[in-house]
Image 1: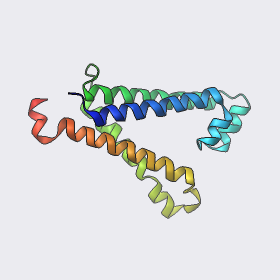
Image 2 (image 1 turned 135 degrees about the vertical axis):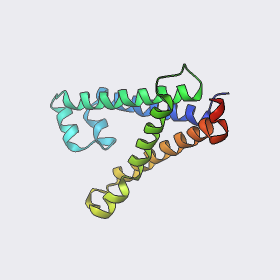
Image 3 (image 1 turned 120 degrees about the vertical axis):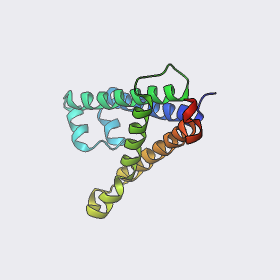
Image 4 (image 1 turned 90 degrees about the horizontal axis):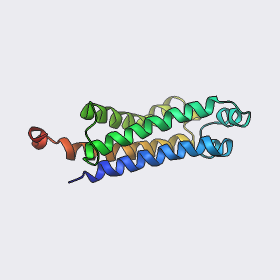
Length: 145
């Protein structure tokens, strides 16, 4: 039976990857709207390849993360280092989600609305992955997997 939280996690990572691809395609307005920073938007407007390469790299990573969640959910074949990879992915999402807290305390000028809502999104993604991980590899089921 597929693991629903990990399926949801895969869909969320895929959606995030597609939004990053949208930033590459639609350029500066999307970079600005999604909070990538004025410097990225200006480089995109100037025709620089840097924002596209950075954003493509992020989209690729998010796509790989989606595949790992699907694999752990049982929806696709087992990928290498599945448990380790998914634990790292979940940890990154959770740490990114919590990163706004020390920023808000130490450099409040950098705790922008983008920092807060993007952190909330990452924390939500991480929580969904964590529930899926627990369901997939909780102590009672370790012997079976």
